[in-house]
Structures are given as structure tokens and as C-alpha cells.
Length: 112
Length: 115
Image 1 (cartoon, helix red, strand yellow):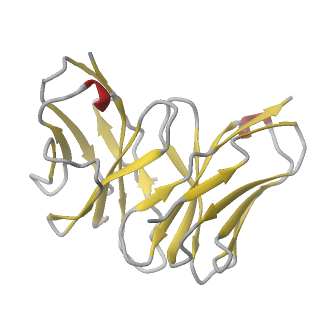
Image 2 (spheres, rainbow over the protein chains, first blue to last red):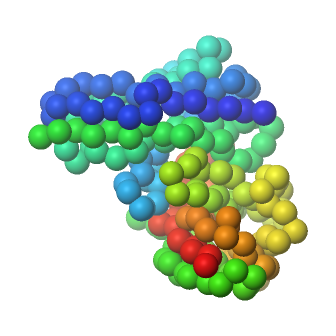
């Protein structure tokens, strides 16, 4: 059974810092991996999706990488802003199923 | 931008009552999902639906739960007899199913409170 772990559970940084969020998964037979953002009490907003054949995806200040063989993904946020404060979730879809398995998230606080 | 729409945004019900949560997926999407998130916990998969039938379900999705796509647009989750532990945020999601364009898009959620 796929297990997804996110480290750290919480992170607080000053505005302007570059930061890295980590995601690891136990079964490397994945179809894709998706990073989401969740604001308190709200739904999930998709940030980036990486197919299993890809190594990274970029969108604005966000860059997500994937190392399938080692079961790891990172989300890099450049020049962080207070508006980036949210919980960031990593989710993995396996090769042989339709559903996505989520990590518990990293709660990011960017201080002005 | 196309959205997944969920209603109601918040429902309060008494234990033992039936609840129906509604979702309108994005119109050209083929795969539909329900997830739930108990306060402070992980987002958990409940069920996936494709071609008018359940394709996968988790151990959480027991006989108290059912899903339907009654009219080709709405996708509903029914909980027959709610329990206190069913209190959670329920998210509907959908995706196209096309290779390379499989972003899973979530709705804003329906918060269910069982008293």
C-alpha cells in the first residue's frame, strides 16, 4: 500500500527566502505526482503535476522535481511571499489504480 | 476557468440521518472522485467512478456510502445513516482521463457536521 510522507510538517520562514518542501513515497510504481495548496478551511488548488516520465515541472516561482526511483519529490518555492502561507500537499497516483494518495502536508508560514 | 462545484458548502445533521452531497464535475471530465478530510488529518480517498460505475473504493467506503451520477452532470455521495465520525470536509474531484492531461481538479468541499 502506497504511503506518502511529507517533511517537515510545519515550516516558518521570513519573506524572500527560497525554500524546499519534501515528499517521499514508498511505492515507486507511480503514474504521476501532484502538488496542491490548501488554505485553511478551503479546498485544494492544483499547483503542479509531474508525469512519471518527467523529472520536473515549473510554474512561476514554483519548481517541482521527481526522482521516481528513490521515491522522492521536492517543491521549491523561490522568493517566498506572505501570500504563499498555506498547507502544501503532495499526492501520488499509482500505476495500477485511479486514486491519489495524499501526504499529511507541510504547513508553511511566510512572515513579512 | 472550469470548476468543480459542490453543494452544500456546509451541512449540519443529526446522527442517523441520511445526507446527500452534490457535485458538478467539469463537463468534459470522465473520472470522478470523492475524498474526505477529517479536521487536522490527511485527505483520504473514498471512491472513484468511471463509465457509470465504481472503479475503486477504499476501506472507508462501506455499505453506508453510495455514489450516483443520476443525470449525466451531477455526481452525488450519499451517506445513509450518519455517524459522529462522518464529520469531515468532503471533496469532489474530477479529471479528463486523457494521457498527459490528468490534473485532478478539486471542488471547494462540503463540510459535514454530525451532531
